[in-house]
Length: 378
Image: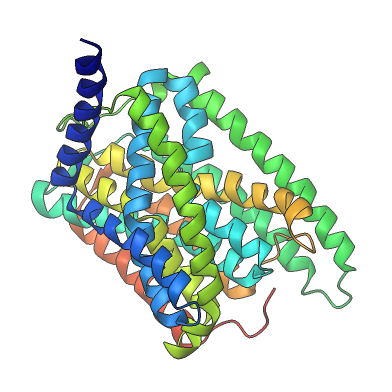
């Protein structure tokens, strides 16, 4: 009896994992995680190969993190679920950015943050409108929730604009002033984000109910499996992120890219791979509220929580504190992307051509950054 008791949970967990891989072929890429770790040990100077392997390896890890977080949140309720989403929803980008901070690659960190905001608001949101609209003609969504998320994102872009503007005046202040300003704004943004979660999950949660009716979400994993995977996958993401950050500079030169383009486009897309898949699937299932919540909610989370948190953490793990000062092109792209999200979410209805326009704007930004990267690292 004891032996049987020990075997059954193991086979149950294995069955859950096998079923998940069957439902999400993206998880088959998990094989590249050990491959990347082995190659890093055997051929540490093969930077381009290590860069490509780490990019592919991060994709299934991000998918597992997203799925495990959803399962834990489903078991703990809205309040704890909101806190989990704040701390774990963008864990892939956060771990990559922490590794880049320790390597003093501030340009890569800021490019990945700006790219994540633009990717979520234009690529993810635009793709959801396009794919959902092609199947369902016209889709409705809760515009109160969409406009709330877009407003929080707009507030964050203004906070980023302020330290970037003061560096452009005739007599720019000393670096210490910019660091102090960025630290104060970071604390303010985290407080605002916390109050925003309390507003949407507690005091006015009735305003944020979904208006779309589609297929049900996936069945959540057992709590033990979800928590175990959160720990294991987080460690693997940290290991793969070190490989990525260590190889990105040399690999970018060999591939004709700059760290800014890699951070703005590649890191943002790789880190959001799991969320993009969920958002697109939700739109196709006529659950546009889910897609918009993922896209705008993740963008607001990056701007109001992840970026300020990195500024605070940089005081402890980096040689010099990071600031919220971005190059002008990145600030412009974030503001334009935020305004586009406000316009797209204003009517409460979505159609496929709205997605085309958002994706076209994203393509313009990506091509411009590839051809004309920022000249001065920050």
